[in-house]
Image 1 (cartoon, rainbow, N blue to C red):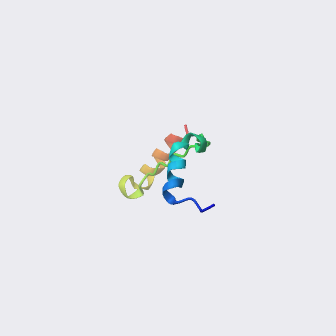
Image 2 (image 1 turned 90 degrees about the vertical axis):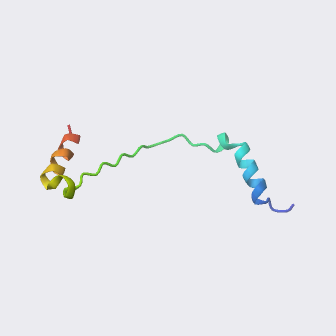
Image 3 (image 1 turned 120 degrees about the vertical axis):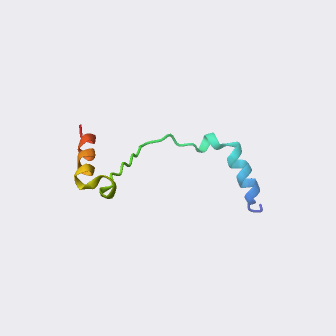
Amino acid sequence: MAPATERQLRAHFLGRQADYAVPPAITFTHIFFSNKKHGDSGAKQKAALLQR
């Protein structure tokens, strides 16, 4: 049996994408406070608000 071609593999995958789907397990949020834009105390104040 000859190896599958790229086109065959792609067609197989696209026809069965639901079989390969994995539900999300984690989330990630990145919030950046700039010292240059808000000053050191401003960045710290904004970060402290997130802790509430």
